Image 1 (tube, helix red, strand yellow):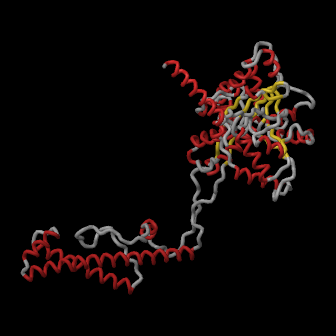
Image 2 (tube, helix red, strand yellow; image 1 turned 30 degrees about the vertical axis):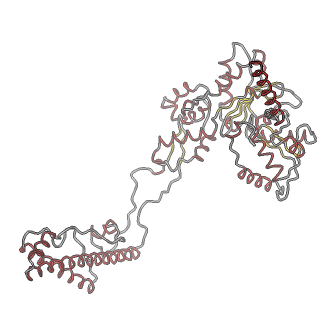
Length: 515
């Protein structure tokens, strides 16, 4: 049952999730046959809908039979992993991953869910933008510019410009371009399109082509002979009508043949007869000799109407162009290597220049790819403006960067520059980058489990799942805020009957008073 109208739009792919769990349990050495008798710590999205958590808890408890589970946010696990232990801290967590970017305010060690903001941009959109840029720049290498290669270029060659406009102006200088452009070599084959066959193999292939061409010519002659013979028989039948004196039928047949006089009929009969005799002689000669008769493009005799080829297996005449261009040499000439007119390796190179900064810049300027969203700086300013000045000073003293999309060189310097522009004069702030932006979430969850393994205040047991539902959540330092949804109670049938009775009595009294 859906607990809110918003839950209806939440996609849940439990079949894929079950496959991922089976894969993880198998590689961790945990048997998923029957049950998994280990506690599970699972990360979830910020402000995760209750319906998604309900389906996940149902999968864990009903399918795998786990004893207890705890939910947390990956960026908060990374945040507390990099903070000194036993320190209740406040700050701003900027987490940018593969699909989206979150900015999470932390007040006295707990998430302020009301002021969390999400930007629907991450590493996936940056890779797609870089792919479009390079495909437009190199339209001849569309197939080689794959998304996986673009992700590799992003990880190894991209960086964040401290000042985007100023950095673009630097790239206009030819010397700066030559010193900073990165050249990527695409895979290619250096083998030239030349014949590597021996003289015997070439001779055998030529003989096969001759035989195929001979068979093709023989078939075409037979078809043409059959059509001419049918036409000749029809004309002879019309001539017999004239000889028999059936003038009406004769004139009607002439009109169907689009002829004007008997003389024209006799002329066509003579031409077709000679053409049929010549075709028969050529077919007899082809059976005796192995010479190839080349069919001219011009018709041997004037046809009454153009003939269309009816063979479905007629191959292109381009395959036999070498047979017509030159005669078969008696001695094979040595094969000469064809030198290319340009360097193939240089042709298959990508020059990545301003694309190094344009692709990751979209998280600060989403308008570069046509997204009507605010960037990190604008969203950060919007969140800070929702707090008093004292709370703002406390938050900016601990700005924490985590997530794989925060690993670009220059990211920390760019965030510091944006904060310097938005904060008051002579105000201070501190920006810290996670020691390992990709794996600190896992390390933080591991440390959290070791510290709270026996703490029943943070784990959801199977009994609590059955009593309070799958959407139930126990809060802790790295978790979401649990906001249960209270559905309005429906009035019972007895109360409705009593209310209707009272209403009818009151209406009856008023009617009596009116009477």
